[in-house]
Each structure stands twice: as structure tokens, then as C-alpha cells.
Length: 307
Image (cartoon, rainbow, N blue to C red; front, side):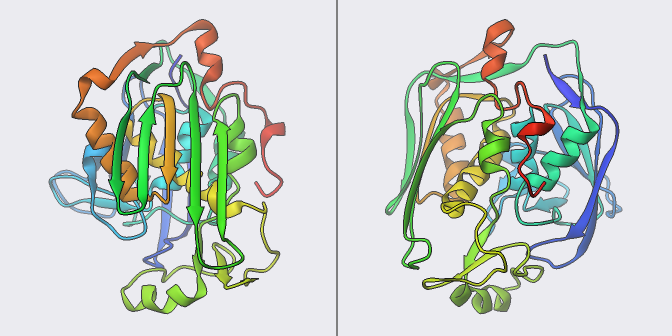
């Protein structure tokens, strides 16, 4: 069945790119409400923004959504991944700034808060989007594809960076029965030291630190404590992809393949999918099928040590 948060849950911190302090609160919502953001700091007629693929507007290095009144919220990918990975389908998210707090750079703090607060089951079944035929988008050497895979969300991601500490990494996972929480949720955003000054000259990464991002410099890892996983960068790319796929508005049953893909390409993939209604079918889930969703069967024991 669909779920919502049991009671309000707040997070506060800095925006990764804006550097601005922000407070964000998840509120319970009714079945079929979906995920909406409300900008509480704006005095405008419509401060509500739906977390949806068709609300995404072009942005550098993050996912940004907007409404027709000009309200925006950026860097939503980590909280969206946490919601999807915990099986939370309906919430109103109030936020008093333009960017979701980065916290430790992963989804683990969001996951820990959601699991500690608990979910309330609603009296409506989960609807899922089953992929029936392959849809693919490309940009140079980058690729993103959705293809059929039964009653699960499979994911395969490959990256290739010149920095020796990253290099080529690839990983495949079935995101069911808590796999996201155990395997991906604690993987942090990352960047190269050589990119930081350029980003800051362009008004980005103003809230970034060695504590909320993994910083690489050739063969060196500059962030204290090193990596949480030997392949933390590709795991984080998978985390981001789950958050961006969550903007479909329902769980996806299929296989996602990402090759050097980023936020913009995954959004292009969803747009291509919804232009091809013959490539998917919306189904109601129940019984054994629900066990294959990302948030099924989670317990506190599934939380990573950092959460």
C-alpha cells in the first residue's frame, strides 16, 4: 500500500551550491498526493512545486524543479532518492530556501530520519510504471536507457574519470528489499579539486566542504577519512539516478542503464519515455510484488554505520 511519513520530520543545514542555511520539513500527506515542495520563504501566489519529471528545468550539477510562478527548489536528488529508497510515496516538503540541505553529501541522514520517524500505511495500492520496451537517449559518449526487467528495478552504471583515484568503475544492483539503504544511501557526492575554483567562480559549490563531498586530486583523496566504499563515486551516481528516476511519480519496474550519465540525461530519458506510451504500462501492485520495491522490508539494521 502507499505510505506517508508518520509525523513531521525536519532537517536543517547548508545548500551545497548556494551555501545558504535552509530548514526543510517533511509533512504527512494523503494517498495519491505524491511529493510536492512548498517554498515557505516566498510571498507569491503559488509556492508549490511538484516533484515531477516535467517540472525539471536546465541546471548545472544538480536537479532543479520550478513552477509557473517562478518558485524553484534545487539539489532535490538526494532527498528524492531517500524517499524512493524508503518506500515513502506521499509528502508535502516545506522548505525555507531555494536548495535542499546537503547534510553529509549522501542520502543517509534523510534515510535515518525517515526510518526513525516511521511510515504510515494508507488505504490505496501502490501504482508502478512497468517498462515494456527499451527507451534510450545519448549525448556524446554518455547514455541512459530503460528496458524491461520484470517486477524489479535493476540498475547498471559505469563511469570513467581521468583521476587515478576514481578511474573506471561499474556496478550492477537490484534495488529491492532494502538494497538502496544498505548499498547506496551513504555514498557521497564527489568532485575533482581542479574543478572547485571554476565552480565557485560560477556561483556553485559555495557550501561544499571536505566533510560533505569527496574531493579527488589525481591519485589522492583529500577528504578526511577517505572513502566509505572503494567504488563510492559510481555508487553515488546510482543514488543520484534513483532520485532522478523518482520524478516519474511512481516506482519503476525495469532496468536502468547509465553510462557516464548525469541528471540532465536521466531527465531526458524520462521525457523520452513519456512521449512513448507504448513503452510502458501503469500497474497496481499488491501481495508478493510489493516485496520487490526498494523500501520493502526495511529495518534499522539496514542503516549504514554513518547514518
